[in-house]
Image (cartoon, rainbow, N blue to C red; front, side, top):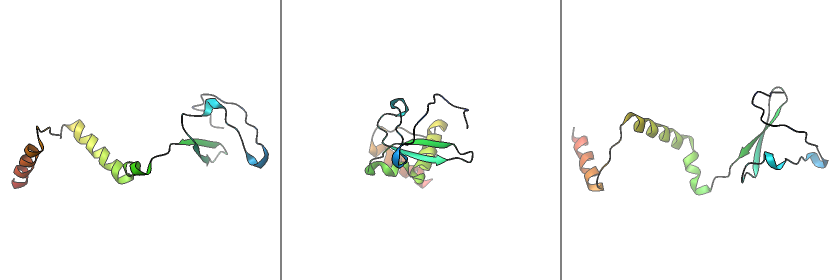
Length: 99
């Protein structure tokens, strides 16, 4: 069994219909679903899943997250601009387009 990052452990009893009850200290906030993974060594890993409201799901798509990563890089590199108004921003964009 992989115990590299073990923080706590205990024994669970497999009940009728293959059910187990997790101790309260194993629960994380409002998590109501767990992903399970059987690893090569036979270890069963339970991973808490957080529900994402449907109207926010776009944020977690691969494409959106890649864009967020590029935006973070631009911010760190100083490739961002602050404008006093939308009109000022449009004027600056038009100037740059003419270059």
